[in-house]
Length: 216
Image (cartoon, rainbow, N blue to C red):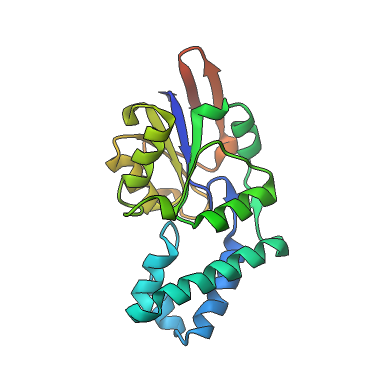
């Protein structure tokens, strides 16, 4: 299967980088600080959602802003602990692309996203974060905004995601979706193409855009 596109849109955590150790460490500490039981914490979906949405599911409304600031502080500080690293294929894929043909679309705050990206040496020309949208994934708004920022028709964009909510956002935006089975099983991911990670893909830049295909 070969996919043709004009622009590639990447989720960050679980797609370009792995931050699972850091996320687990920081959110566990955060939950303990706010007296959230393991049972309550387990019932809330974390991956692919904004900290505001997660906190709002668990805490009274008048404590959400302070709680979100706290988890951001914990996660940014934890970057120095080495909890973030590149996933297979990330460097090769991004290095092959012109800077104006790709963007990162993350549910993290800008401060956290930039800290993690800086730690692994990724400097995107376009970065869409939680502060840039009014509705996060699975709403299509983040990906639609990224396409607009790149000046590309959404139908000519490919979304790379590891989380079901992110894939849903890409589909809702009318984009082709590629799922990476880095944090979920392949059978849990609904996408046009499912691969293990970016290293399983071949990316070729042509005069007409970008061709993406699974390696044999």
